[in-house]
Length: 564
RNA sequence: UGGGCCGUCGCCAAGCGGUAAGGCACUGGAUUUUGAUUCCAGCAUUCCCAGGUUCGAAUCCUGGCGGCCCAGCCA
Image (tube, rainbow, N blue to C red):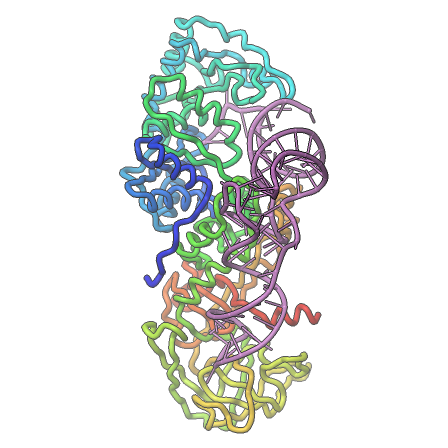
C-alpha cells in the first residue's frame, strides 16, 4: 500500500549471486527453490528460508523460485501437509515458478541415474542389516570397514537392484550404496545409502514404487533437473556438500547447482523442532498446531500477525552463517509497526469497573465522534455513546497511587478518551472492602478542549455500560520461561519449561458496540492495551473472542518494574 | 581427542588492508486527549585472546580459547 520501496537486503548469499552473475557462472540465470518435506506444519524458521529463496527470485531480473516437496519418505509424509504448506507460502505472499514440483516427479530419472552409477562401478547393492551397516561405519575418530558386498559385480548389482524395484525383497533386506570411501573423515562419504526398500504407499506415486531414494542422493539431482543455480540450505548440511557434489560429478547431467548453507532461525522463549512442537500438541499443552502461542505460521497467523510483518522480520534478522538466537522483541516490534500504521482503533475494557457519572442524567445518551486512526483519515470515523454509567479498567483507578501515577484517584481528575474530564467523588465498596463502583462528576466544558486553570495529565479508555458488548479476550505471553531454546529442548520434560501464564482468558470484557460486528481475522488496536484480532476458532455469534497479538509498548510498566 | 563451520555493542548485523554502517534494546529530552505513535540526542578508541606482517589490521599470517554440527535404511 503505502510501503516505501525498501532497499534489497545485503547478505553473503546475495554477494555470491552477484559475483556469479558477473562471471556468468550459470549463464546469467538465478534459480532457487524452497524444498520442504511434507511431514509437518511450517514455522517461522521456514519463513526465513521462504523469504530468502522467494525473495531472491523477486529481486533479481528473470530469477525464479520453485516450490518443491522433498517427498522421498512416504512413511512420514502426508498430503494434508502438502496443502497446508502451500497455503502458508501463499499467505506469506509468494508465488512459485510454474507447477508445484515433487522430488517424486523424478523417481524414474533418479532410478536411471542409479543404474548409471552401478554401471560405472560407483554404486552397489549392500545386503548388510541396518545394524551391521551402523556397526561397520566406524566412529568419528575411527574409519569404517568395507562391506563384504562392496565388490559385487556390475551384473549382480544390476540384477539385485532391478529385483529390489520389482518388489522381490522385504523392507531392509538390501540397500543401494554409493561406493566412495569407508575411511573418509567425513562420515557422510562412507558409502552412504542411496536407496532403501520401503513397501509403503506414497501420497503422489501411490504404489508404483517400493524403493525410495535418500535425501543425499535425490536432492542434488532434483536441483539439477530443475536447473537450480543456488541451492540454499541450513548449516547442518555443510558436511553433506561433498556428497552433493560427488553425486552430480559422477552422473551424466549438465547442471551443477551450488549448495550454500546459512544459519537456521532460533527465537528466544520458543523451540522450532517439529518433534517438540508435536509434543506440545499431543500432550495438549496448546490448542493445536495453530494455537496462537505456537511459532508455526498457522499459529502466528491466528495470533494476528500479518504476512508483511513476517517478511519485515526476516529482512531484519539477516542471513549469515552464525548461530544466533533472536529476541522476541524483534518479532513483536515488526507487528507493532505494521498494526500501528494499519489497525483501526477501538475501546475495550478488559477488567471492568463501573463508574456512575452523577452529573449525567440517566436517560441521556450523547453520541461522540471518534476517528478510527490518529494518522490515517481514510480509515474513517465512528460514533460512540456517552452515558451516565460507564466502565473503566480497574487498573486505571488507585486508592493509594504510586509515585507519578496519572490515572484516576479519589478526588482526582482524569480525561475519558474522546470525551470529558471526570472527577472521582466517591468510592463505593462492598462489605469485604472490594471496590465495586466509583461515583464521579464530569466537567461539561471539557469536550474537545482542556479545562481552564488546571492540567489533567491522565487519559483513560472507557465504554458505555448501557450500550456495549460482552467479549472474551485471550492474553498470550511467551510459551516457555527460559529464553535459550537449547535449555528448553534439552529439558528432561518439556512440561517443566512451560510458562504457566502463557494464556490468560478474560471472560467478560466490555467492548464498544461497533466491535460486535467484527469478523474473524479483523484486527484492532484496543486503545492503551494492544493489538487484538477476532479469533476464527472460538468466536460465536453470541460472543466474540479476541486474541491479543501484542501489547502496546508500556513505559509505565517499565517504570513500575524499576521501582519494585 | 576425526571432519566441517562459526566468533564485530545486551540481541541481530554491515564491513573484505585506509582508521567501526544500520536495526532492535537501552538512556535522556520534545510533542501528544492512547504512559502508544512521532521527533531529536546519546549509546563499541574497538572487532574472542596472544603474537606477527604492514606507514596503516576487525580485515592478511601464526598460535591459542570458546561455541555449533556430523556416527538414520530421516530430511
